[in-house]
Figure 1 (cartoon, rainbow, N blue to C red):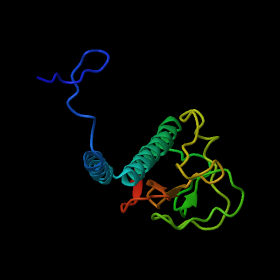
Figure 2: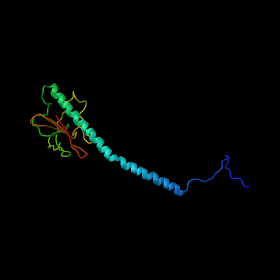
Figure 3: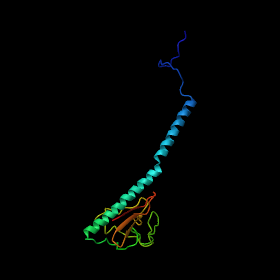
Figure 4: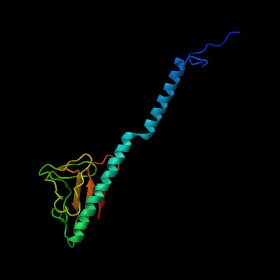
Length: 165
């Protein structure tokens, strides 16, 4: 009777490892699962949704600060905002503040700097994820009834982001 071969530790070896086919099958299954998970999560859409959520929050923040100013100053609009004012880009740029995307139709004039009148209500003026301090990519408009509308000009989704009070 022949005894099974033993390795130095005295353990019986029944196979030498995985075959090439077994390894390829496992790699293929893992690859398919990775692709399915990546497509299901859709990271580019999640990034767009996150940016638009920030824009919505920023629009509400700016509008709330403007209305806090109006309440504290007995109905007076902040410096730079006037009744019947056409839509203007917010920021510190002195010229060329024209943007016509995402629902904004801003004329090419100096940007409206709201950081000074709203300093008491905002730690810093909100800036769009793709904007700068010079051109925040937010706009303000006041209609004939003194209703203030703030818009996000850099929307990546299909819905325009704006708020009015």
